[in-house]
Length: 207
Image (cartoon, rainbow, N blue to C red; front, side, top):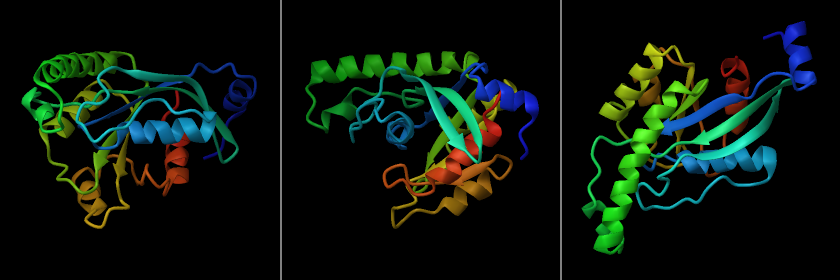
């Protein structure tokens, strides 16, 4: 894709407003791992902590003015790592990780508020990375609801098929189910195919 003179001027002189890029998806699909990888690649700093405990990210985490450069183009984003989306949050799910009941109930409350906040942010994002786990069935209520909302709001979306480094990964299942959307297969943990993701962001996530 050729860059126009107006795009070149805006990008070169930093006059284009940053793209508010939201990272959305179900719990534990690797959203924060991906956000950390993007932030590290372009700013040298991580955005948040990663844990096997569900809903570790319960508040929107931000990294502003992240400059991504690819193929002679530069795009500036405000990176927004969203809490994991879920249709049900039960405090008892936290108990199996050794978390005590009182803290588990507080986590569940915060996680519920986090889901509400993430949904509200759909009114304020310019583009979305919809992260899905390549080892899981993509036909979930969370994925269907998220993509339906994005389509209704006319928000550009890139499906990020994560965890392709795992032996039981089947990224082709996700590509087949959601073939109408641009998608890219990556491993946020190992960094595999991140260049392809940056190419997709530069192509699709623009004002």
